[in-house]
Amino acid sequence: MHDTYTGAVRRWAVLRAPFTTRAWAEVAYCLLGFPVAVIGFVLVLVLLVLGAGLTVSLLGAVLGLLLVVVSTGLARVFAAVHRGLAAGLLGERVPSPMLLRPAGRAFARLDARLRDAAGWRSAAYVLVKLPVAAVELYAVGWWLTGLLNLSAPLRWAAFGQRPHEGAEGMPTITPIPVGGGAPHSTSFAGTFVAAAIGAVTLLAAPWVTRGIVAVDRWLVRALLGPGELAQRVRNLEETRALAVDDSAALLRRLERDLHDGAQVRLVALAMSLDMAKEGLGADGEPVADPGRLRRLLETAHSNATEALTELRDLARGLHPPVLDDGLPDALATLAARSTVPVELTVDIPERPTPAIETIAYFCAAELLTNVIKHSGARRAVLRARQEEGLLRLCLTDDGHGGATLGAGSGLPGLTQRVRTVDGTLDISSPDGGPTAVTVALPLHA
Image 1 (cartoon, helix red, strand yellow):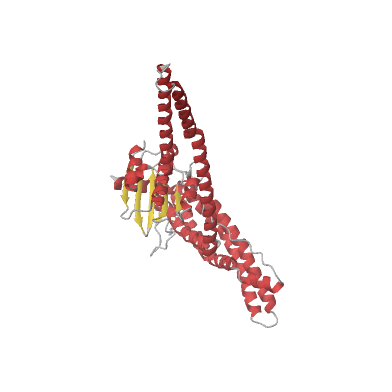
Image 2 (tube, rainbow, N blue to C red; image 1 turned 90 degrees about the vertical axis):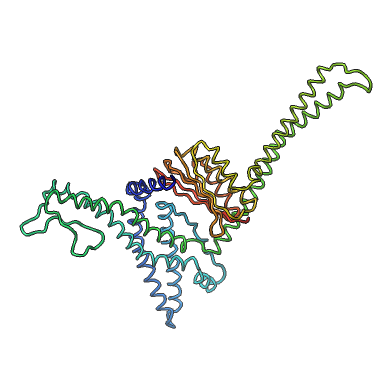
């Protein structure tokens, strides 16, 4: 059943790929990135070559070093442009490296700029980007040839493109060189062969573009970010701040809930018991008003019961009791309670620590809530598995897609929650679906 569902989703994804916003955004990225890549490559390479050439000479060494510094600074500017294109069109948001503000004397500042690792990574990206952009432009050619061949019957009928005397006919253009030449249409019926080739080319074009752009995405993440060590320090600072804020918010919530809930019930309980005690009178004296005393005791019992219920709810918010038997049983309970049918697969041979299980449970609960409230899905698949030392939760649904880190989805809160333990949350949700959210957590907090 699951294989049939997965196969249907994949076939539908292939058929609708050319019409998705993601596909056209990637085409726009390829087209807009090419001129920026050409200009950046020429300027940065010329400055680097001139600077390196002058540096090896005795008279122009200082000027050469200055040109090298200018080239890395200029590379940072082009890197910022490429980061903006990647963020705006691909959704690939890479944090920019820290601005370099060297202090000290002139030679100290020059030395600091020459040691600017982010600048050199930016220069490397600008130089590598040109061949990558050329291949991306080739990927755009798949779209153009597909559309051109698809319109062959219309062109034949509208413009009368018929073969001349001794000519081979209307050529079919293919993005891949074919031995012996591409087929030619010598009649109107033959143009439908070209149209079929165009349709196949157009269906393949988004995946060719996506594969080439994936290489560019990797380069952007590897070269245009703040660097592994700097990013690690930044993540630790942010997650520490998030953990402190989360703990403070939790304490405030507990204080408010105890003050406004259980504490009020306990105060009412104490007052009811005091009044009941006064109604008993002195030792050996009969009770003056048994009915009133009974009502006071009933009120005290009701307050005690409600206080216990509120305290259980508070404790459940800290650690769900369903996790006592392990994460698989807890996920099975979530899946069973969901109003959208959920197919659950769990493969966790090693039990994670309680903190990781709690985070995974709340992530699964929030993601299922989003599916029910926002996705319009008819079914969902939840997988929990252990691989490469990580616990991975993946929830896929067949809804209308468009899930983002906003719009009241609760996903920003999940992102903050998983980052406190050095986890990650990845979202793939093109317009029209399907949506796939993957949470990766370490097994030990």
